[in-house]
Image (tube, rainbow, N blue to C red; front, side, top):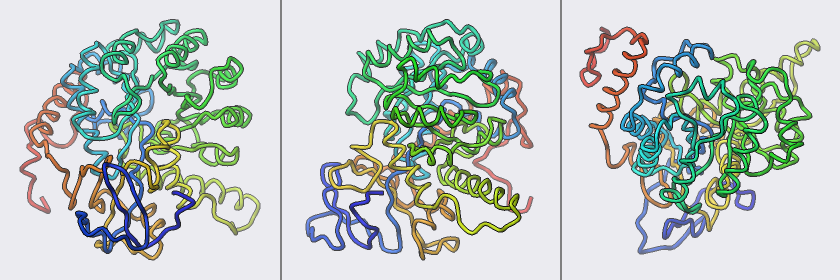
Length: 448
């Protein structure tokens, strides 16, 4: 991902949490060595948009429409205690680390009380992941905040900035998850973005997907009002006009595509190709762990193959077979690493294997039958999954090694399962094929 350093078979030297050198051969006789033979090292993956608090609802939403999802959130949000949010966020963050993700933007629209906000921060810190916490609106009043569009972001974010996340240089930093003009007035959006800028933090918002926001060109309105820029991240944008995409790109605004969720829930076609055509910064996210894959390998594949399908369909309409391929494996890997880091304001610290950056690294093993290392970039994008992730390092600290997460929190996984059952029962969601007393520690024998 660093154009000044070619792909190579070689060594990476790490000291003090930073990448010191990348060479074909490095002599460091006193160094601790991680044997990376038959493996490929990539920058830690960046999940630029995920709602970690929804992890405990995993397995419930695979057949939901977007309307179903909103209906459940209206009912579920009020049932999340601060400890529930902690457990779900911690479990989700550890799932990200296990699948090679070292950085997330956690869009936490579940901050019912200051205690909820504090417990999200505790979970992110305890997980060891690098994260931007998107300080969001309350989940307990989800419907109110979605419909009462003149409400301003609650001022607890100022307390969090002052007391908990005052620095932009720590592993966990602060951002603002704003509703944006699709869910609030332009005046409310202006106030929220001004609040974020006064606190020196970035903002992220959902825009132009499905029927949300009607057919108003809200991104154009944001640009004309001086409310776009490098500190702004837009998510989805499926119904953006090409002129709005160009405006966002020209103003340095990033756009995050969450292809799997967008295709499931009727958001519209992912805009990956249109952003690239405009010269923009495409980033990827997994969005809803309750209904879709949470790993970035899946999101890379959804993004690249959808874009290829669209390009191929145009060729077919012209009565010919396509003679070029749209979007390469390296393009989409860049979106899941360096471009994601850039969108979150972290490109000076992470996103590429560059001397001077923090050692946020993911090591994948070829010692599995489904991987062939002919072209390592293609192998990572088209064939790898979480089972191939041998080692994960965040700022030089091991988070996963030899396929195992370090400092396991198995008891917290069971606590999270209990929280999930209580919330699912309260919302009256179907629990699936297994009875409520089924214990996943005692799986039935193979074939039963």
